[in-house]
Length: 70
Image 1 (cartoon, rainbow, N blue to C red):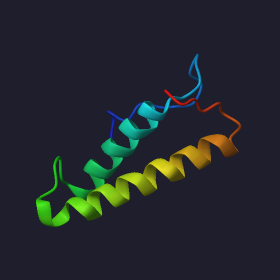
Image 2 (cartoon, rainbow, N blue to C red; image 1 turned 60 degrees about the horizontal axis):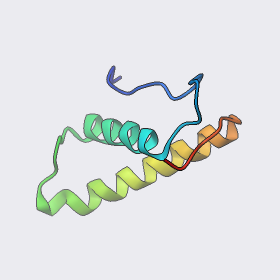
Image 3 (cartoon, rainbow, N blue to C red; image 1 turned 90 degrees about the vertical axis):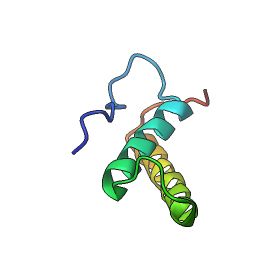
């Protein structure tokens, strides 16, 4: 779907929170079609970003991958 989303599995270090946020941002941008949402859509965009990041974190933890804090 989006080649710029970096795979977070099989990394040589625990996946960082920043890497999860960056992947979530790329996904939400791709799906919404917005690189930067308008003020009217900013709250919805940011909520989606948080939800995608949380779902990503939960999935990685369910796959028994280490998730770090950095």
